Amino acid sequence: MSKPNSSDRLYSKDHEWVQSQADGSAVVGITDYAQEMLTDIVFVELPDVGRVVAKGEAMAVVESVKSVSDVYAPLGGEIIDVNRALEDKPELINSDAFGEGWIAKIQPADPEEMAALLSAVDYDALIQQEKH
Image 1 (tube, rainbow, N blue to C red):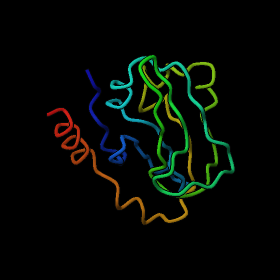
Image 2: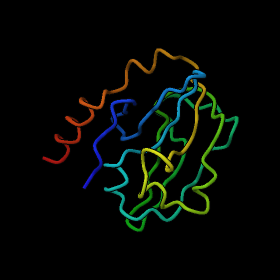
Image 3: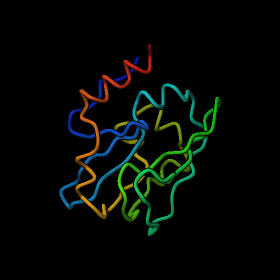
């Protein structure tokens, strides 16, 4: 059963979450719904720190026993940190998608892109549409 989507973050239609930080950066991961659809995650290919990504560009790869999926940048900007813990424990995404399973931290090039992301309520509605 999915954990409820947290209202302290925003969501992309590609099932990534974004949480703004006090320093203006944004932490990014995949949603609990996304990890549930993937099932057991066995490998995560992290982006390179310093890489500049465009909104919507594939920035990481998550491999599960079922499939291989791209993780898309919900915001354009520079990758300033990655979750190295996922190299040894990719299953952190399954156990704590909204916490220890974060993937990368982005310094947004255009903070206005946050306005185009979905609220938790809108993201919940999107998931309900996908389930039917």
